[in-house]
Image (tube, rainbow, N blue to C red):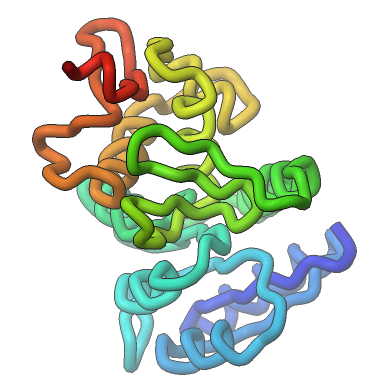
Length: 236
């Protein structure tokens, strides 16, 4: 994985060094920071950060605060590595904009595998996207395939790499119902293991494109079947 830069935000220096060594064995460039303020400054000052590994319990600024700031203008993939193991904390982390969540103590091999997987997904859809300004537009929703963001009535909303792939799948196939298993397998390129995360990402997409996310107009549920993106005529 040469040419990719990973920002490791971990205040425990021994753990940070273990992560650094494991990633450098895969030919990643690793930048280490040990508090939340430095994490945000480094992310904003570096020309190219391809993935962020973020501990939630960071000094000065929490990992949650840093993720929120990053997500204001970047879809860079983020993996949370945290001692907070409860499912509630995992859902919060995903809702903030993280793409994956790994609980401490973790296996270094699993961490590297998740990094590799996210880098491949992000890189693959970047490389395979057409270079002209292609968009998918339905009603007031326009998905930019080059900028990897969505415009809602002309207002730009940034997407994570996972959100982009899910919305692209649904908008390319309006009115078609996709089960959570089908969405998971399309996005993660592996057998469906934890389809609850699909619902979390759908909620985040709705928060960005819907006027009232609790009463969505675009991404609807077909109960017992899955999700679909609805054209305006289907709502009349």
